[in-house]
Amino acid sequence: MALAALLTPVLAAPVATAGGVLNAPDRGNSDWVGGPEGGGARAPAPRAAATRVYQGQAFDTCHTPSLATMDAWLESPYGAVGIYYGGRGRYCSEQPNLDRDWVTAVRGDDWEILPIYVGSQAPCVFAENKQHVTIGAKPAEEGAEEGMDAVQSAAALGIKQGSALYLDMEAYDYRDSGCADTTLAFVRAWSSEVARQGYLPGFYSSAGWGVRHMENARKQGVTDLPEVIWFARWQVPPNVDDEPELPADAWTPHRRIHQYAGDVTEGYGGQSMSIDRNLVDAPVAVTD
Figure 1 (spheres, rainbow, N blue to C red):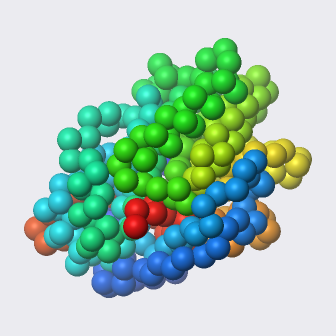
Figure 2 (tube, one colour):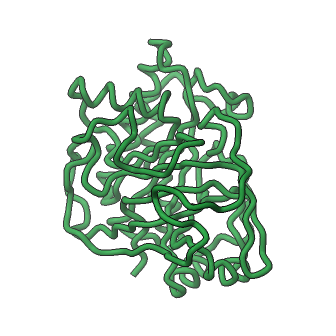
């Protein structure tokens, strides 16, 4: 996900920010809410009634950490972890630590989980290491197929209906109209299928590229859009409410994640990792 920000990585140690003090052990909070509350678009079919919302700090990292590392990081300020659980576009396609037992164990330690699916990418994706996995000639068909794969892969890990699944679409040039149309068709089909299967479709991208594209579509009244937005904007204080690309009535309430730093190294309990930092006010995985 780090490439989506298209900014110089922040390499500083944890510091106090507008969104909270990162070196304090405040791991956020979670709660259950009812069905759809606003969001990007209306789902084509009802989802599970309960959605689990987490508010607090989260990290994501390319390889799923070991259980020992997750235990050590219980003393960190993070209360949620992003896992790259599926998709043909994953950079870290091998995930030896990630299985159903891992999910059960970390949830038993009160970690929340943000499931990330890195599927086919926009034909005009900037990142060279994603240009071999772009959307093909039938974007709607491919989006639906990958949406089903996202659901089946999540279910295999014990991630149930009502969970948010986040489509990682690395930064792309939405100003290319042909590419924009192809990408939007894929994202809508992916989101529609995920929602049809009882899950909540989310979307990750750079604030100024993919997220701007989704917001433009929302303003135009496009349906079947993702219902949660995870926007990357680095080198600014963490804040889910003040993103310049998103008006106050877009993707609310509890439908936003801000990735505010990437490729930073942190360590807790003797275990260090390279991570991206996120502030979350959004749905997470349901496993109970």
